[in-house]
Length: 291
Length: 315
Image 1 (cartoon, rainbow over the protein chains, first blue to last red):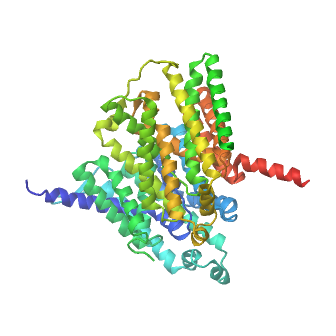
Image 2 (cartoon, each protein chain N blue to C red; image 1 turned 120 degrees about the vertical axis):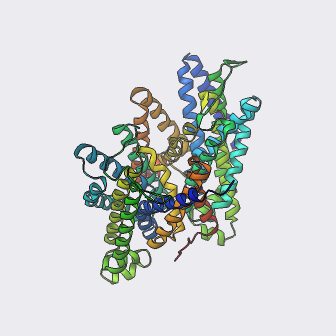
Image 3 (cartoon, chains in turn purple, green; image 1 turned 60 degrees about the vertical axis):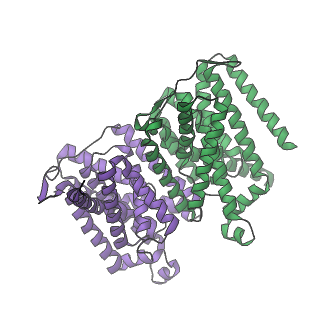
């Protein structure tokens, strides 16, 4: 049997596109967990929430899901700020974030999921847009538009975030908040406010990632769970809080998962990311682009 | 000596519950009671690692389902009495707990928690792809209708779970008051300081993951016989993980009685809510109670009672 080069090439390209999408899903965790040290395991639940909002607006008004997510950005930003305020007042200020903060986010994840089940049921929901369906073809390489568009928008978003974090005062303050809060205070920036802004941005990315998710695949409330391991695997592998590292790790994971799904069947794909995570945690906790 | 008095009292209490329920002639009591007791074992097991050592395990469902699937695998090979299955399920989950500990316990708290979540998905994927135990289609387990001496099968299962619950609580209480418990507490309070003063932290943590995993596996082993049919989605249900975290946190994590109170309270409320409202709502209740308690009463019901007693003695 000769080696299926075309199949492999297609698997790699599909993995690249998937990786671009994974970068958007992980961006929020890279900010919350990588930079702020807030273990927000409820992040995938916020992504699913974003998917459902895109679905409702799309089903009722026919607006493009990704456009909807851009309109929803301020709302998610405010939501993130509010969640952080609760988290800060209840746990961070008392120094109890380790055990109880984790349980808090786990509870949030669960409430969001069950709440969505109660309102929408467990049926798969999907959206309609002109780019869902058509596929670009270059000789034997397929580029489905419903993967390509999220991937490109996601990379654009990562670029904007990286520029924001490295070129603006608040962005740099966000990078600094995990390193030295006292120095930040001396620069006349309130660490709690900076963290609130950063967490707001982190949740805002979930709105966009949610729209991508429902463009790529039909969504039901418990889909988010599969992403918990993925996002943390990518975040850790990317070096905790480094956005370029996140993109790199996301693409790497996307390719490995896509190849696994192509050659061994899709039912093995979830184990790949989690296996990746376990191995990374065990052998190289600093990630590829570790600080 | 006092341990044995405690065990005798607990056994007497258990016998009272069993014969009381039998006297009422309502099999539903046994069905509901089994689930509450199962959660009692899970909550107590979780608390050995989560409450005593301060390491949050999100992978309860994995250990629980491993115990259940051990039963399925052995049942397919040749049927065996349930106590033997419980022992074997406990051994399998205990070994996996030990392995997980080796792989992850050198990590900081949060990383450990994420790794346990990852473990749950890896184990679920392996089971889903393992055809011998039914794969994603699930497996049927035919159980006998009656059991000698006890009578109906559900009463037998209830009795087995009752004994297991008493043993788990007894073990947790014994651990809490031995050198092991003090070692665990020192890890929870300040791992670095404990290490520096000569506490063998890694060895203690490995013992905690093994014990905790083993009890979770034991709680899962009779599950296939209880439901008669087991598929990965029900065995690895996230509800097990949420409940096993919520119950100790609601009751209070530092003593053995906390998970017992939490499990009896939340477990009963859920059983009532499942019957009267719906099963989705009962999960919502757990989530809301968990978030509410960690925000408002960080030390659980036990913490509230202690604060009340202290306020009274100060007056």
